Amino acid sequence: MSTINHTDLLTPDELAARLKVPLSWVYDHVRKRAAERLPGFKLGKYWRFRESDVIEWLNGQSRPR
Image 1 (tube, rainbow, N blue to C red):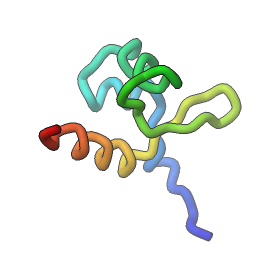
Image 2: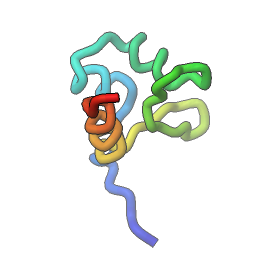
Image 3: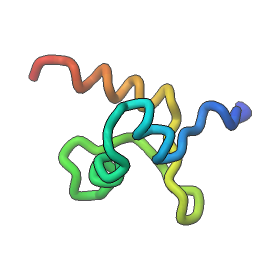
Image 4: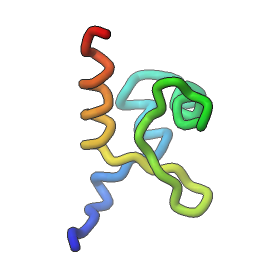
């Protein structure tokens, strides 16, 4: 079992700041109906994002379709 380092997890506010997008954009992209859903998970009612998952997701977004 691997341990989770708290610095690996981002809050929606931290993710929005790192991506330089509004907080509402983050929430729009975690909704079930979002076409290109951000990789995240809920801890109770709180959304969290693994930095490595988001980086991988971003790399996939930059590939031509």
